[in-house]
Image 1 (cartoon, helix red, strand yellow):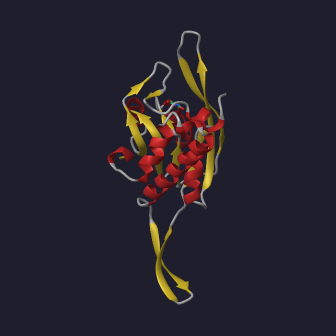
Image 2: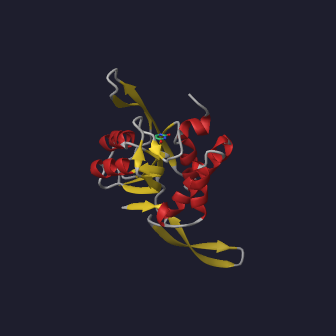
Image 3: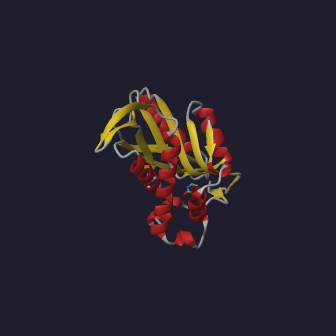
Length: 213
Ligand code: URA
């Protein structure tokens, strides 16, 4: 299943437009905030697919029919670019536990590279719903590798992947390697540069949020 924000119009499209805008994105605080707001929006959309328990809640004036999540998801992200999107999801799923992963690109002299997962901090994910956030799903290689590391360790109940912008190649790679994952995307862009930057994309999400490495 793919949910693509480009198929709808709502205020979330404005957050995405501002994230892409080369003038507005110079304001790092606004960039982080827009990414966070996008995370909140995706959390709301994902929540519509989760299970709720009907309850009754005592108000000062009577008893109201209410609904509560039966299970909090676990929110996972790849450092460092994923932090603002993760924070947005956490603002909404405010009781959720978090998983943090670092993956880095090891360049070979011949121009090829491999991605290696370096560090994982996670609670037990057995039977949990996991929402993995990364702002840019470019080749999809880090995403697949990080998700597989988690799937190899735990019997995860349901996997959701959130990205502000994906490339067509990234989407195909994820769908081929993680066929059960549900994809929540802000946009799908057709092209990538030779260095795997999405075009038109938005640039380097980590640098825009936290400064150039
Ligand atoms: N990571 C980014 O930050 N931007 C891209 O376009 C691709 C990967």
